[in-house]
Image (cartoon, rainbow over all chains, first blue to last red):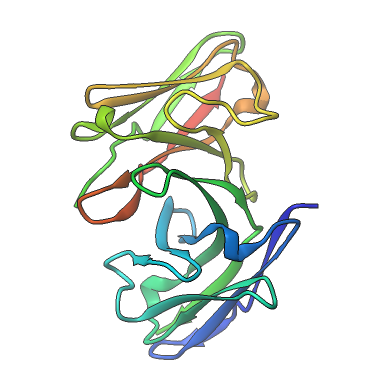
Length: 121
Length: 108
């Protein structure tokens, strides 16, 4: 079955660090663009980062310099290293597979169930 | 930065047609897509590349994109279509994904 399973969410103090994981099954992470999208409680979708293994990484301005996206191809897993966390980073973090032309057409065709990150101030 | 604007809410009677708009500067020059999200669930892609429908999405969902506005149309709306809907595009200027603020569709 093709699916994504996030883990690593937790309650953490402001200024702390956390690493989220997203285990993929049924397809290969290294052959796809992958992304993280978050959703604060009661709010809309907020894009975080997009990545292609061995290629470019893109970040939202709000997380640039604090978050790093990466993958471990041997584990078929995507990661999001989050440093210098702030209260406004509190959200459910979704992992998503990206489709498109790699130029100006990107969309998310497969989503995980999400993992909750709560940053206390 | 590039912004996509959606109406906060849209209401429709069962069986009627619901239209949800997404506005952005020259959005028609980019590809737009749409997601449906029901309470407590992950988003689901319902329209991609302006007008394409993924496998398993009912034919009553359709999309268009021209000028500054992309539109998601749900024909013969059913109670199960009640959800939040988000548009999304790629901002080539900043090399980033942009989401609209979301529209809550209520089936009366």
